[in-house]
Image (cartoon, rainbow, N blue to C red; front, side):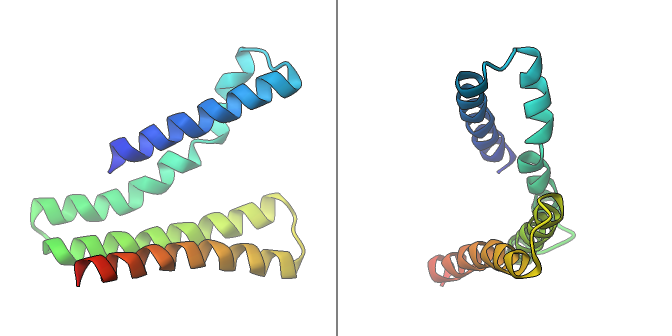
Amino acid sequence: MLLADERVWDMHVGSGTVSSMSALAMRPVMVGALGRREFAVIAAAIIPLVAVALGAADPLAHRAAVQLALWLGVAVLAAQGIRYTRLERLSPSSAIVTIGLNLAIGLALVALEVLIAH
């Protein structure tokens, strides 16, 4: 799971770096700053990963650990939506839409898991 998130992060930062470098003639020293800014993609995976690790270590049943990881992922998406709306200083209506879309994505993933598992 973490490896997959790390690969997605690599592709995300890599594509963002290439587009930024071509659009703004970004200097290589700025690539590190971009990586630090985009670290939230990896950090978002850490909380659900802890739940999966608890399932692997047996304090939690496997199924409970997966469910917990999914719901923690939804919570992380909501928190990231809130953070984004604050950083971008969005209006209250735009903030509600942004957070709602983040939650909708998370809930769609939970729904897919339920459809696949049952």
